[in-house]
Image 1: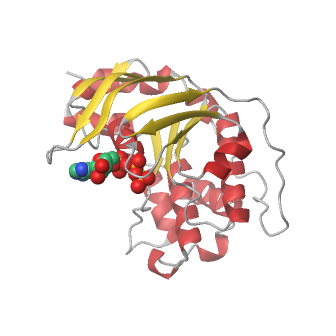
Image 2: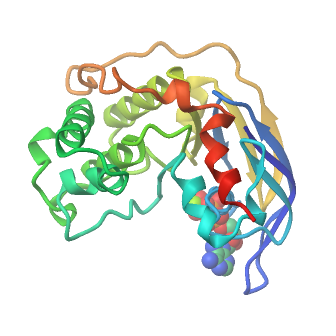
Amino acid sequence: MIQLYHVHKRYPNGCDALSDVTMRVREGEFVFLTGPSGAGKSTLLHLLLVMERVTDGQILIGGRNIHVLRDASVPYLRRNIGVVFQDFRLIGRRTVFDNVAIALEIMGLTRKEVERRVGQLLDGLRLTHRAGAYPGDLSGGEQQRVAIARALVNEPAILLCDEPTGNLDPDLGHDIMNLLLDVNRRGTTVVVATHDAGLIERYGLRTLVLARGTLVEDRPRSGRLAPIERGPAAAVGPDPLATSTAATSAGAAAFADIAEEAP
Ligand SMILES: Nc1ncnc2c1ncn2[C@@H]1O[C@H](COP(=O)(O)OP(=O)(O)OP(=O)(O)O)[C@@H](O)[C@H]1O
Ligand SMILES: [Mg+2]
């Protein structure tokens, strides 16, 4: 599903953020991407979104070489990729509800369907009471959850998360992980960039380790998934993804429309 071949990224300032990275993430996998600050984790995610272009090498998503796409085709790719940025990137002048709803509105869903889907996600992330608030009035953890709701709302085939538990207290971080695992169980491929060694240790999932732009380790999942505990304050609500169709859209078919748009 995601394939990198000898990927090199040099920024215009001469910084080599990634060097000769070759890796593959299969459809439906859950992968942690880790390494010290500056290792290239965010850069790798930005390349997958074509927010940056590779300097050398190739990236294939759903069989498509994404770095030969015309700029006009990039939105078709991004439609299938949910992303939670390290700095959230919420729209300050839109409410929580509207921040989450925007992708669905762009897709032309009816108001009723938008309300149903957004309501369900906000409920699951315990944000319903903040639906009318603006991002500037939210705590870091609340903003994080809104960013996650926004990334999930159009049921993407791939979910990319940059430090999704970075601003959360441990209970809430655990909650978010449960939600991401749930999304993954429904068929979405999930890639989580994180420094959080404790988080990685606890879940025993496949872990790719970057150091100064180079892939230095590919740890397979250990199989010993930590039991999923939920503190009383940390319970994720009643299955926010119950009607998700992510599993059916997670295949290469999700990227078929990109082919039509490519040169
Ligand atoms: N837009 C940019 N222009 C120039 N250099 C950049 C840019 N973005 C990142 N870098 C450099 O590329 C390297 C990798 O940065 P990146 O943000 O990918 O690391 P990271 O692993 O995500 O770090 P962190 O854990 O701190 O988020 C760093 O040396 C960084 O300074
Ligand atoms: Mg980063």
